[in-house]
Structure formats: C-alpha cells, structure tokens
Amino acid sequence: MATIEITLEVIYSWDHRKEKRVSVVNKILTEEEVVAQIEDGMTIGVGGWGSRRKPMSLIMAIIRAGIQDLTVVSYGGPEIGLLSATGQLKKAIYGFVSLDSIPLEPHFRVARQTGKIEATEFDEGAFYLGLMAAAHRVPFYPTRAGLGSDMLEMNPELKLVESPYPDKSGKHEKLVAIPAFDIDVSLVHMNRADQGGNGQFLGPDLFFDDLFAMAAKKTYMSCEKIVATENLLDEGSVHTLRIPRIFVNGVVEAPRGAHFTECPPDYGRDEEFQKLYAATAKDSDLWESFRSRYLETDSHQEYLRMVDSRKEEK
Amino acid sequence: MRRSDICIAEIAECFRGESDILCNPIGISPIIGGRLAKATFAPDVVMTDAVSVLATNTLPIGDQDAPRVIESYAPYRTIFDILWSGRRHVMMGATQIDQYGNQNIAAIGGFQKPKAQLLGLRGAPGNLINHRTSYWVPNHTKRSFVSKVDVVSGPGYDRMGEIGEPGNRYHDLHRVVSNLGVFDFDTPDRRMRLRSIHPGVEVAEVVENTDFEIVIPDNLELSRVPSEAELEIIKIIDPTELRYSEVQDA
Image (cartoon, rainbow over the protein chains, first blue to last red):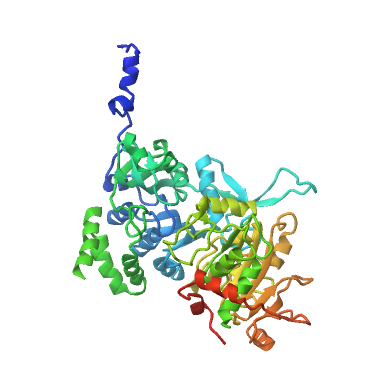
C-alpha cells in the first residue's frame, strides 16, 4: 500500500482557504429516491411546526407513490391533513395539528370526527420529551405533564414512574414516563444544506428538526438550496448550522419545497393556497378537483407550475 | 365604557405583582391585557413577540413589521424549558371550565370519538402542573361554565388534590376572567368564587349563565374600570379594535 508523506504542502492542499477543496460526501437524492426508502406501515417523523417549514415536496412524493398505512409523528400541520384525506394515514402521534392561521387543521378535524385515523395526543412539551428520548436512546423521559389531566386516560399505554430519589420530606415523586418515539424515517426541510446533508436554518426557529433527525433510523433532508460547504457561513452565522450530516442519510434540493407552509426568510406562507386547501375538507367536489390538479402532478416542479398557473389564471 | 376594555384591565390585573417571569397570554384579549400590564404596573415581566423573541417594547397585536427591541431569543424549545422551570404565567382560553377550574380545549363528546374536535390538549397539562395559570372566557354561558367538562386538558383543584403532594406543589390556578366577571378559587374547598363583577352586570346574570353553583361573597366588588391613560395604551396595542369583535357590549 502506498504511503503519503505528510508535508505542510499536503496538509495545505486540503485547506479550503487555499484550494477550495471540499471532501464532504455526496448524499444528493431526488424526492423519488427518498420515497423509495419508505415502505407501507412505516412511522414517519416530520419536522417543522404547524404550517411552518414542512418538507412538503417529500410529503407530495409520498402521496404520488401511494405508500399506505403510515404513522406520522409531528408537531402536526398539513402533512397529517393531506395524508388522512388521501387515506394513506393510519395513525397520527402529535402535540397538536394546526395550520397556524387556521387554528385546527380542517382535514384532521374531519378524520377525527369520522374516526378515520387512530390518534395519540400528547401535551406539547411531553411530545418534545418523546423525541428527545428517542434521540438520546433512553426508553423514556419523565415529566409532571399529564398528571391530573386526561392525557393518561386518552393514552392507556402511558405509564408512571416513581423517582428513586426521596425529596426532603422523604416522598418519592410519581412522574409520567413519556416513551421514546419509534421513528423509521424522519423528513425535515432546511433553508440551506450542503451535499453531505449539513443543514442550515435561517428563519426564526429551528423547531425540533435536529431531534427528529437524531430520533429516526434514517433521516432525509430537503432544502431550498444546496450550497458548497465552504459557502454555508456566507448564508448565516455558525449558530444556524444545527443539523450535522452524521444524522442525515440524503439531501434533496427542493426550491419552494415547503410550499404552502412558510419558510422564512426565503418565503412566507401561501395563505391563499392554504385557504383553498382548507376549503376542500368540507366539500368532496372541491377536494376531488384539488387532488387531481395538485396531487396527481408527476413532480415537485410540476406541482409548482400548477400552483403558479392558478395565480396567472386569475 | 366598553365591556371589552373592562375585561382587558382585569386580564392585566391577573399579572399584577409579577416580575422576572414570562408573561404568556394566548389569544386576542389576553395578549392585549398582558401587554397593558407590562406597559404599566408589571414592567419586569418578559413577553414574546408571538414568534420567537422576547421584546421589551409595547408591540401592537398582530403587527409583524412593528420594530422590536429584542432582549432575548425564545424559540419554542426555550418556551418549554421556561415552562418546566416554573418562571411563567400563562393565560389560556377555555371552551369549557368547571367549578374546580378543570379546563377543556380538546374535544366535545370525549376524546375517542369526538363530536367536535377542538384544538387539543395543546400545552395545558404541562402548564397547569408547572406554573401559575389563568383563563379567559369571552362568552360566559352554561355551555362554557359547565358542571362537568368533556375532556380535562388543564386540571383543576379537585384533580390536583387527588394527585396530592409533592406532585401538585406547582399547580397554581390563579383567576378566570369572563365577559361577565372575574373569578378565583379562594374558598376553603377551592371551588370557583365570583371575585368581582363587571359594571353593568347583575349577579343573577352570572348565576343564570353558570351550570354549577358559584360561590358569591357577601360584599361583592365591582371590576376595575381602566383609566384614561390605560385606554390610550390599549389603543396603541390594539389599533384595529380586534378586542371589540371578541366581547359584545351588554
């Protein structure tokens, strides 16, 4: 085996400041290649929050592929509404399901009131602990949240734990054990990423996307734009680099990939389109025309063309 | 004097005496009232801009472009951390509330097969058991002040009494403000008491619109009417008069 003599020259040749040479692995995929990794019956973690920075181009690809019996784990938004409306969602595990400017996701409301999906509802903070337990590979994290409320009755699988440590009066406090979520694949959407899947958020809140990435067996990241690793800091400060590539199995460049949810500072929510989507929950004809126009498109680009042509038609 | 402005002054009163906590009102009138408290007698509380930062200046409600004097960063994860630390006083809505203060914002007709899916548990279970909580009910009727809530999102004093110490030690259900009056739980058995009645409201109106027996004190006080200076600040916080769409005048 040939050996390389380590000289200053060799070391400098790997220094991007001198040669712009980057050794990051290439994990770039298409939406279709990501969805090929998802099977019927899997549990999918979805990053973002309500109708904010959701990996919608990947959700649309799941809809096109017709994957069935899915469980979605999320601070829920339109991914839960859409997948329940298409009949692909078996179960939702969530802290809430909202479109923000429309407080309750309308398709989720219908699915709940008709008993179409199974539901496991957590206190919002308790949900964070389920993610964190999965990320940290512990079976549960304890919390007071849920004691006294109906959260335990609603989820009979939830158990209490007793602290092994007595308090000053000698009592052992009982707490709720929030179990680690068992997530097969997580999907998150970032503002920027490099080809290795180092993710960058440029908006006001990362939400819990780093925990979703760590909690799942595999994580796929879409982003508005793939940039060279050495250019990530041109986009935002080092504090915006919050998902390292060791937690990311593939990265998809999807401009406007969060549409119609917001993805600041790149774009805001498409409120008009969201209203159009929301209206389809109460009218099967509206839903059918929405489905055939937007969900039967053959790619993210085609979907965006249909969205934009609607504006031109007006 | 509009009823809504009286409600907002009494919402602000819920935060009197607070300092070095996150004052976290949710909803139109609560946000206006909380910001009024911070702008006047409770300047040491911190408040979010309803997105991701703590802003020290008085912000108009819903104005995404208003200049912010940012004093700290508070993404959702930090909000949960503050919540668990106990340094927070939240005011939430309640679709239903009962005499011990059990709150429902989750579902009508039970969780398993709801007749009407509402917002969900949201953060109520964690809020109630970790720090001080108040409620705002803009439409006080027998459908909102009920004898039994369909789902317990935020537990009241009877549920927390069953939990006992030490689990209940941070539970602190402070007040309920409705369009008819202000209520607290300063009774021996922690049942809801009419604390003050809004000017122009009769006690009989409160009783008729409440589906449980409410404790009426012997010398009942009138709710506070906001001062001219406070009304000016309310106008700055709510220039488009969102508050009047939430509370009807008598």
